[in-house]
Image (cartoon, rainbow, N blue to C red; front, top):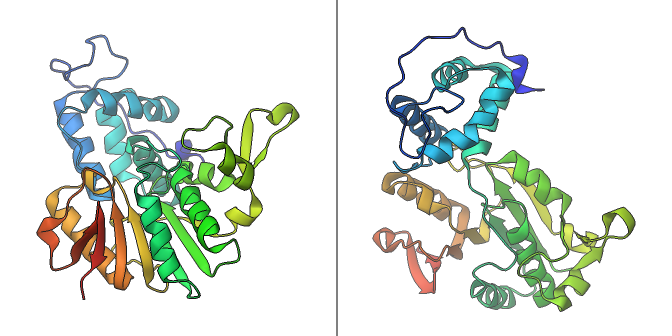
Length: 296
């Protein structure tokens, strides 16, 4: 269902102050500091994301498309309409709002020091049923990097399953397709040959993940701010890389407590290179470079 099924709110005249930093005075839509603070509050409530004060231009650029597609002429008008939205159409627009404001920078085998450590953890669990959760799946490069590590370490028939989630439904659709440019960053010629099919004809220049690799993964939308984490059996390994940097300290602590609950005793948490949880020692102990072990 298109989000424009909702009826736009009537226009509310307003006196616009000076434009926020980085925005021209002759911009297409009315957008001021009050609107920006309103966006910051809404994305924090819905996704736990703490937008920095200097992100006005980014917010304007990314949300302007939603204003055009929904027929609104100012951010105040759009945000008032969004806050009143309800039902399936309302939820669809809230998802569009979140999709616009999330960042999806990724590549295959990004922060490559983690993958030998993952292989070691898999070897230690050889012969066991293993569950891995990647909760920032983005467009799929990280999930398929994990799956390739599983296949190279234990084989495609290993009893390993990956749950890969993201709050952004559009990037998950891309991940599920498993189609990428043949020159995608991070893939060696050997891995390209072993794990991908090359496109021909109209699909020349593209690659697709082989079915035996894709079968290891389940993609699912998931919001870390959800009050209930209904994710099935506990996980042996969780990848939560470059996610916490978007959260404030109380939100980080709440998410870490959730990770602790869904990990098995001794389970491993892999995080991003700029993330440090030394103030959560009651939950996790450092095991290696940006790798933590569940306490208790």
